[in-house]
Length: 199
Ligand code: TYD
Image 1 (cartoon, rainbow, N blue to C red):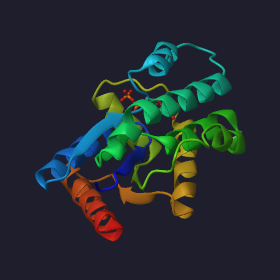
Image 2 (image 1 turned 120 degrees about the vertical axis):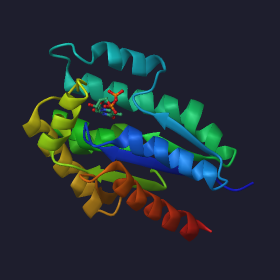
Image 3 (image 1 turned 180 degrees about the horizontal axis):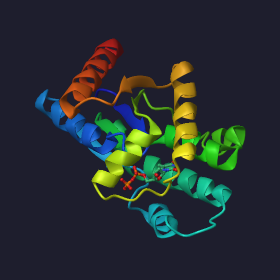
């Protein structure tokens, strides 16, 4: 039985993660891999609490950080690990680095955020779709979609945090400003390389 492979697709709001993650699962399927799409926040019990709190004012960012971490461990245990054990490629639309970026900025406590997420295994490959905060927010507005974080300055700081993890070699940066198919061809070539390296 081949070992599974966990790919995380990351980026700020409006970077196109969901589109790229779905295209990736489809592309992997066509190439004969068993691949599954999943996302965070999940539709499980902690994800439901997070969604119900999403637009509430004055939720303590530390409480949110704990809930995102709880949602992730639950997701890992119930969904991701069983699939990886069966040899699937799991593509997660947001995962660990969403907390390392967003909650580190929101709480100002990066070490603590790392600590409460220490049981979440690192992804085998983390792809960071890079777009500026103002462009990401414009895309959301065009889709008439709300974000829990609509503050451009905040999202720009989140972007910098993500780029810090790119610098540490934990995420691979993809320029996400271009058309969907161009961004995807870069995503696909990174995944192809990562999958051939693991053999
Ligand atoms: P998003 O991927 O935009 O979900 P949807 O498309 O369903 O709205 O994620 C929702 C928000 O949650 C997004 O603004 C980022 C935030 N988030 C965190 O702050 N930390 C996390 O760990 C995760 C998973 C998401």
